[in-house]
Image 1 (tube, rainbow, N blue to C red):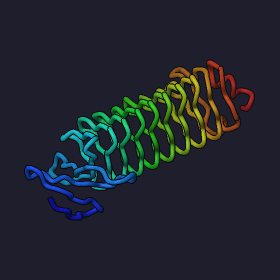
Image 2: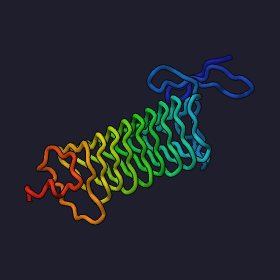
Image 3: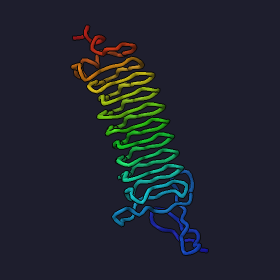
Image 4: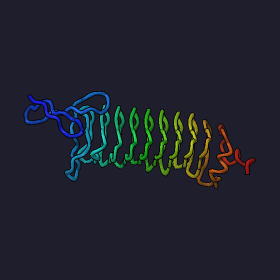
Length: 227
């Protein structure tokens, strides 16, 4: 048995059957971990022994996967992104920047970047994009061509399918946003079904005039008095 310090603060504490056992501190004390070997043969970031990253996945040198997290298929964890707790990142997903994916959430064929956080039991899929400092949490579902940015929050049991949300907007409760809906500013939407492919939606400037929207089947009807 021996102790040898390696780069990034990892410490090799023993050798058994020619397999090094390395400790690495992900921020909550040292745990057993090893660096991922990427499909191109390059050395990737650190993966805790309790976590899993498929051999086909790519993990940048500065990216970490720990806790009970799982990364599958051709998913890519880039830059200084972190995936931890019980999060699941599946094939087609790209996590980059300083994004954090944790809790019991799942990401399927979606992109998370910037300082965005995905947590709780949230689910992202089918090409969704989340960036900036946006937060998707609780039991929210974000899918399709949805783009969530700024400091937006999607929480509760909200369902966002193809809509665009930015600024400080909050979509919570049982709200449903369909393709074509554009929400920005300080809007709070807690319920109702908004948007639709057969509607022309107003620009953010119009929507920003409303402080709270809830319970309507047509967002435009609620905004008509401001036009």
